[in-house]
Length: 255
Image (cartoon, rainbow, N blue to C red):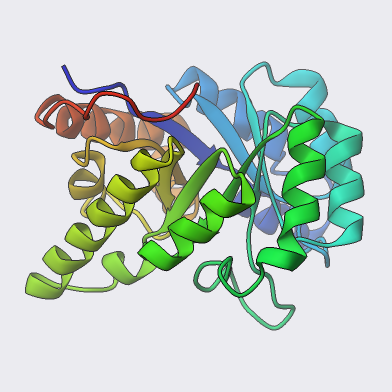
């Protein structure tokens, strides 16, 4: 039987809507509660340097109220390291961040930043935080993540989601090859960015992917049909796709 596929629901854009007007509504912590009830295995939140959506108080409340694992996305900066060590989330995913971007664009260049990233990975790992790197699905980036001692990698699926036909098939193959390399290093493989009902199944069917992180699409669907049914449909699609996936090779990540 193929291994269970975890779903992390990213609540950033609930906070984006709240911050468009100010005040307290809609509450991202309430969204996190709904997500867990609807089948999410964890909650993902990106604490950006400019705090454009998730705030420091949101992180405090998520840690206090939500029992599910919290995956904190953050840039590799001194401020973010201090936040991670103060809040001690279950996991931290290091992502690239530029002030002028609308959302995270592409993966972090772990291969070029090994020396810079090493202290961040080490300090958080020693504090008991599972550290992943949000990277492009390339062997070079996977090798760098392994060199850094990351517990997991999260493959950026934006290029896959924006492609069609044979190009999309090649992107699925590229993610599968990168996942196989990560498996050799006993790192967990996650994936996310831009996944929708249309695109999730091919990624969910890759047996070495153990977690998907999805947010923007689900918040958008929630406008039309509610957050809980939007997440439940995503959960069902993931489960159906995983049921047809071949078993993962033996060995693999240390859990």
